[in-house]
Length: 146
View (cartoon, rainbow, N blue to C red):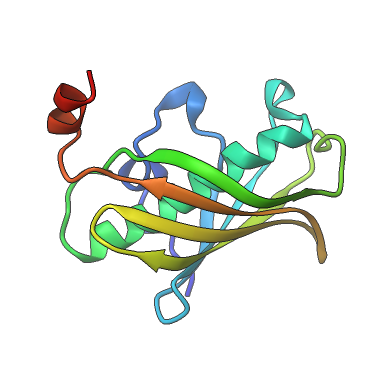
């Protein structure tokens, strides 16, 4: 289903210059998946930036489920690790639109695992499994982590 009724600022905790994805184009609640589009910026063209594009897409998916659950603000999370990272390109092309499909493979109240693919048309140019942690209370987490 197309999802244009939630601005990215309501789905992810990133702001301004750090918002790298452009828009959500599809959400499938039953599949627990989301598709976003982005055009890479000059400073985010190298292939290793794929991890951040995928992480922001995963954050958008988590944020979308938060919205469905009635939460008002996007909860910050932390990327714990990446498995099965595959990069089929050295760099993204300027002015080209890419799509990221992210699927939630596992989630509980604070941990989640996502499978991600970045597509150039029908070709997968990057993929990975991301593991993330989102504390219930960021302020409490930061107090105890010092």
